[in-house]
Structures are given as C-alpha cells and as structure tokens.
Length: 169
Image (cartoon, rainbow, N blue to C red; front, side, top):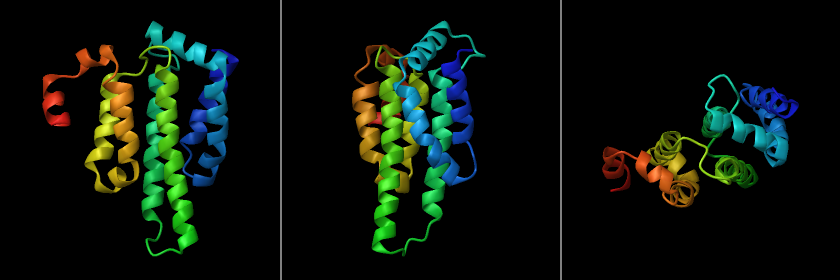
C-alpha cells in the first residue's frame, strides 16, 4: 500500500470515531488527501483492478456514508429550540457535510465512473425518503442524481426497471 493510501486509510478510520470533534478535525485532512494526485491515482487503479482487499473509491464512499449518518444523527439530537446563532451553526455544518459527499462523488467519478451506481442510488434514495434529511440535503441529492448518476451512460444500464419505476416516478 502506498503512503498516500495509508494516510487515507488512517483518515477514514478517524472519520469513524464516535467523537464529533475528532471527526470534524479529520475532514480537512480528508479533503487534502482527495486533492492529492497520488491518492487519486492509487484509488483509481485499485477501483479499476477490482481487487477486494485494496482501498478503493467504493470503500472510501462507504466510510463517508457512515460519517454522514453519524453527523446527521448528531445534528438531529441537538435541541430544536436553540438560539439563532446555534441554529445558524447547525445549518452551516449540515451544508458542509452534504457538500463534502457531493465533492467526493465528483472527485471519484471525474475521470470516468468509478463508484458503484447501486451505492449512489441507495445513498440518494435513503436521504430523499427521510423527511428530515430530505429537507436538509434534498437539493444536493437532486444535483447528484442529475449530474452524477443520470448523466452517466454506464449507469443507465445498471439501473433496474424496478428502480426506474420506483425511484423516478
């Protein structure tokens, strides 16, 4: 495993931390690693080779989904009758989390579709089906659906007839 992927693996483990403060600290490192050309190249190679034991885009997306769920849960547990500044901070955190997922998906698929279509659809549909997350992230999911799933020909063939009729109608 290259040093770049090793750093990303450690970063992913830290994103799974139960402490929100620790996860938040790691986000900037995560973004930095996604901007690193060596990290991106290694993830591309591993995703293309489809060898199960290597860190690839799908594995990192799985970690990012868990991070997203923890952040959503954390934000839902905060008191709804908080001050205006607390609510503004909460809204900003929610936007940052949603933007991070969208940024990751675009990084992964920038050089061709690397993420599994089914995983992207599951992520989008889970958010859209939940009223709270849909209110917060519905526009991000709509953007992901239109720009990152439905605009990719390879994904068209991977969406079953049942998904087409159940998801988009």
